[in-house]
Image 1 (tube, helix red, strand yellow):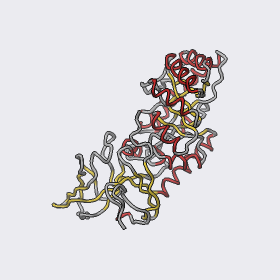
Image 2 (cartoon, helix red, strand yellow):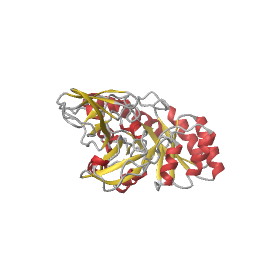
Image 3 (cartoon, helix red, strand yellow):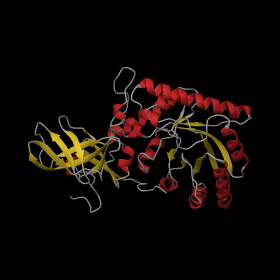
Image 4 (tube, helix red, strand yellow):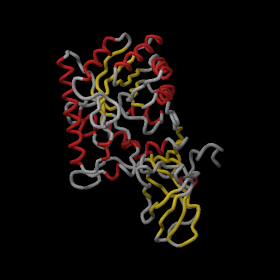
Amino acid sequence: MEPGYDLPAMIGMTEAEVQTPALILDLDALEANVALMAAEARGMGVALRPHAKMHKSADIALMQIAAGAVGICCQKVSEAEALVRAGVGDVLISNEVRDGVKLARLARLAGRARVAVCVDDAGGVAELAAAVAEAGTEVRVLVEVDVGAGRCGVAPGAAAVGLAQAIAAAPGLTFGGLQAYHGSAQHLRSDAERAAAIADVVGEVRETLAALEAAGIAVPCVTGAGTGSFRHEGGSGVFTELQCGSYAFMDADYGRNLDAGGRVASPFRNAMFVLAGVMSKTKPGHAVCDAGLKVMSMESGLPVSARAGVAYVGASDEHGTLADPGDVLRPGDRLRLIPGHCDPTVNLHDWYVGLRGGVVECLWPVTARGKHF
């Protein structure tokens, strides 16, 4: 049995038969990660809304919702559309949308699912209100606060009040709360650094909540947090919802985060790998695989080999150079690689090959691959 022309594997194949390079999932690890994060959120008394920009998969989003997530986050309208078409019923676009066509699509999408979006200026509120009025739908709207990322968002404190009032006054819009995410804090290596960064975030959220309370505005949700810092936000008493994404897969960069004792911090397992095939072995200590820059994102560093004694040391478009000091590799061998950054790696592939016990159990499409508009 051979895979189809556009499929990397077929159900029932062994890992050694999967066409490489391929994006593979350890299903046992994935399911354990999904269950663990759901339990962590329940234990802290906060909601979980995983970020689907990481996996772009309706199958995984629905698995997370079945495990207790209240819905998912997306970053783009087209990403949300793809996942709603596949059965996801509650989506927060945790980003600004400022384009007439996109806003019209978002407003129509709200007729098929529960939809929320972020704003950070009054013009965005007015444009969204016009789109919703045209579509005859309703949208929840969150004020994004810049709590340290230096990207989108209003300044903490009083700046959020006017926006919240504008949202509440607009027909078809409902003030949904605050978006407060600090992305770079996720990758601070020590627990002390992450704790300090999130303490600053929490202080800025409290300042904003106080300003809204003084204006008589109730805040139904404060959402944010990520895989690297979720326990700090979740235990803060101000965050009501977590947006963690990478926990489901993990990657080499998250593996560099340390806990207070200087050990690897994450309780989650590596569940996603690039399966590479050795294609050349012409000299001692050196091998070449078929997974290069077109297969993995490397802005967060080179992938880590899951095989002891073998290191991935260089990349070009179609080739990966391997240090093999023990000369254990042979042409045709398969090698699991842990990418530096899972999110953009996923976006380079059409399919997930799900493995359990070394056998292909499922093939899942990367539902929202390329949905950036």
